[in-house]
Length: 560
Ligand SMILES: Nc1ncnc2c1ncn2[C@@H]1O[C@H](COP(=O)(O)OS(=O)(=O)O)[C@@H](OP(=O)(O)O)[C@H]1O
Ligand SMILES: [Mg+2]
Image (tube, rainbow, N blue to C red):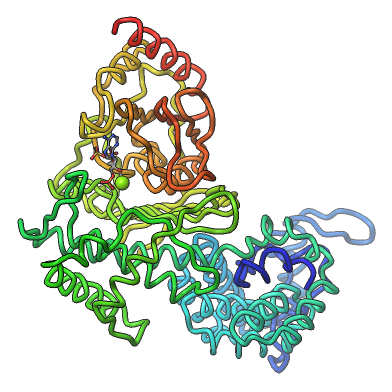
């Protein structure tokens, strides 16, 4: 198990890969007959394997036209009509099953494991006669693992590893599951040895991560679950927002029971799903809640969190008020350049939340100071483009979940759990056609400086002002081309206000830098420590934007 010793077996909890990416060319040839043993292998399977679109055939060394072949076939056809009909039924069923299998693979690659599970299960249950239904069992086993049905997943993997000999991914997945869930390192070692024997690529860690997307999927599934549940909690609170929900922090910014509830819930879900080496850097702590008079609020938060846990149904626990306070306080980590740390803004854009506008639950994972995964739940963001004005038609459905893993692209999924789609930043190259986002609150970003930059670039559209990292999400799917953020002097940017948004945009093909052109550095603890601002756009526009920013900053400084 040398390969994973430094990452998966140490600080990493071993995880299960998206195993159903293309079969490995170096792996041994797999069981090839299309029909499962036991299925009558008659001329029907032979007929099935012949391509009906084949236009030419070799006859006595010469190519014969298909029309001649057809005539020849119709006069000497030894195959009865009944056999032909049976063959076309098989052919149709194979296409159906392959389509379902492909869809399952796609959904699995997108991290939509519950849906992937449905597709794989349908192939396993309804197409047993085909040998390739065994491959659907592999997908099913992995999806089961990802949705948390781990006992059954491992039983299925063990079964498939015997019936589907020569498939290295199954052995590798089983190794990870045996290690992480059964705490059986020796058995895990054996399974991993089989995987590497079948496919030596498995000894190469970068191949395992980049080609087999192993191991990050488990973290992504956990992060999506945590953010989606918190989004639901926040939506509930926003609907019934009462003045008494609003408290005051030392900095006078409003904090709601939803902020605390969201932080407690994310912290709880992550610790349940990925307990090993848990570290969380998050915005809130329980200091104010523990003060005199805080008890009633803590009880309301605890009820909210317990209601969310119950409605999800995966965890059979009820948290006490002390559990909730502890969950909130587990976000006190300082982050840094070593190890892995979750980074959370439980409600980014609190002011937007209180106004009934945009806000986001922003969750990211740092590994060695770099963002490797990000999830942005934006409960009020329309599913379709918010366009140049920030407006959308009132009938538009809202609630978006953006997610990205390093090297894996960015996806957007409705918060109701329907299928995800891959998103890309806009390809606009002409700044005149670009629109730009900035903070809603003038106190958070210098609107006059953005306006000067836009003028220099020739941007025609007015600024789109929305709260929170919903700006990064909207930009990642091409709603606008530029995001400008210039806090007033003295403000220190926090990592939780940018980590998730940053990877969501960069994985969608965008660029995020400070106004000096340097990438954001998430390795220094809670603060980003930049004094210049943050600029975001696509690769093509960045050079133009960068010079407009430099010139505008100089001009503004000179005019003071
Ligand atoms: N003075 C100042 N300058 C710059 N930024 C500040 C400032 N004060 C707060 N914040 C942070 O801004 C977060 C809100 O994000 P946005 O600025 O994008 O949203 S908004 O349009 O201002 O609502 C907001 O996030 P939340 O506190 O989570 O709401 C803050 O982290
Ligand atoms: Mg914030």
